[in-house]
Length: 489
Ligand code: NAD
Image (cartoon, rainbow, N blue to C red; front, side):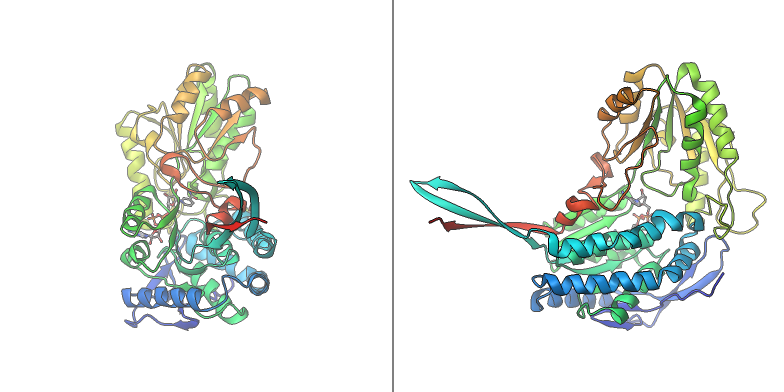
């Protein structure tokens, strides 16, 4: 692997610098368990300074109103990202344990390639328009409707798709005219600190408009939800932390935008060949070791095809290559940390205790000496109410559940606190569509069609979140709405 060009410094008020305490924390490669670098361990004082800088930059510069300047700055950022793309790829592989295969897709390339979507929206979006006149006591009234940036955005991101999720927040927040304080997950700090370095060194984005504060202390991130100088907090992470963010934000009635967990279901209808579905169902749960919030982790199989379905999915999962993330044939690397590995293994144990049958995997792979790996695991005969069918495991673990008829499948799929995504397979697309319309989730795939793209609004029903990321809907999350009434002539 080429040498990592990981940035150790945080970006606060235009300056790359060490933590106020002088302390650092280790960045660990989950595939090798080796330390790949140190990062400034941002303190509460550092976060306070970053918030003050973002507030001042928003209030005292023309960043929020100068759309053409913003567009130029975002184009500079796009160019810088392109130039640094290979370094960023190596960073994501090393710190997130992401297989190189998926860095050519959503993890790195797709989103960098799509960044012009945000720079173009900077000037193409209609920030001001006029509504039709209304009558008030015999006088026609005009109404101007304006969309203005919310102000200072606190952005908190997880470790599974670190570069993509940092860009998915910083891109639209800046394009719509806000300033930002970005707090990355402690497991994947370089994907944020290197973005900070590009912004500081390769763009004219004014000091304080983007601040990056990495920290090993979750409490530093929690300041973003509570601080009255922050106008909106955008958070991607677990539902449990999302609840904390929501609670913290309530003290100042802050706007929130939450992308949380999922427990999505693949529904296999009874008119489709299991040979078509099994590879997709088996492979998707192994992608990036199942560490994707929208990955279907339950598969609902009609009773009459159940035995065959379980067997074929197990065969598909058994054929998945996994191990070294740098090997281009591997679909699956490690999970992100020892803590996460223990968590996934303890869920598998819980599944066993609650009566699930372990058809494949179930442990740590014996042939890989180092790294936080978990075997591709298929749990069959899972009760739809069992812990493993209800809670997000965030590992390569698929739960197979039999069902009686379409209504039963819909009921089981919707039996969840989550509502993020899902898939429906049928020999008849209209039948699959009819089922898809009855599933209470933010995105769905029919017969393998892909919904993910920068212009697709993505988010969840129920406890999978509040608001939508990407697309014009995602851009508008970062805007306020103002109406100015004027006399009409
Ligand atoms: P996490 O909730 O543990 O942490 C996410 C971020 O929140 C980290 O930066 C962490 O430092 C910070 N944090 C922790 N406690 C905090 C607090 N009290 N206040 C503010 N910030 C705090 O999540 P994770 O384990 O890093 O990521 C995995 C989770 O993310 C999974 O649940 C997954 O489903 C979810 N996720 C959701 C989406 C989506 O778009 N819906 C996308 C990716 C990941």
